[in-house]
Amino acid sequence: MDEPVGEGAQQVRELPEVADRVLAVVDQVPPGRAVSYGDVGRAAGCGPRQVGQVMSRYGSLVAWWRVLRADGRPPQCHEATALEHYRSEGTPLRGERVDLTLARHPLEVPVAVPQEDAPRD
Image 1 (cartoon, one colour):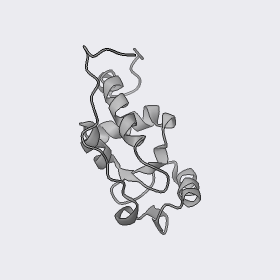
Image 2 (tube, helix red, strand yellow):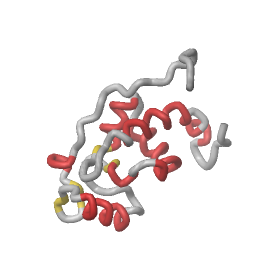
Image 3 (cartoon, rainbow, N blue to C red):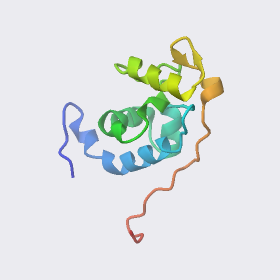
Image 4 (cartoon, one colour):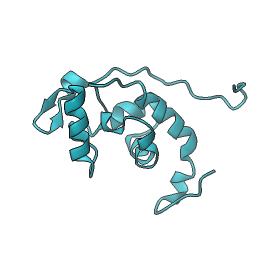
């Protein structure tokens, strides 16, 4: 297991199972579409802040730019790169924000949670 880092290390220790669920949800979002941290949290069975923690630590494994704040703003400190992705994917924008009314992708809720005793391939 990864060692916890930074402030809130106690919470980070709990993330790997949540991370799998969050990343599985984000993988559902196709190019040109987007979801909010809250959307992902509802589908993954956690809160938007946990989604943010997962995305900050493991987001490079998925299309991170497709997960937005509720008002359509891109992830903080990554705005320029995210905007490049939105433009290349044809994501509906209003200025420098994603128009979630048009771009929101419906998610499967809830995402299947891995079972401890289920056989793994």
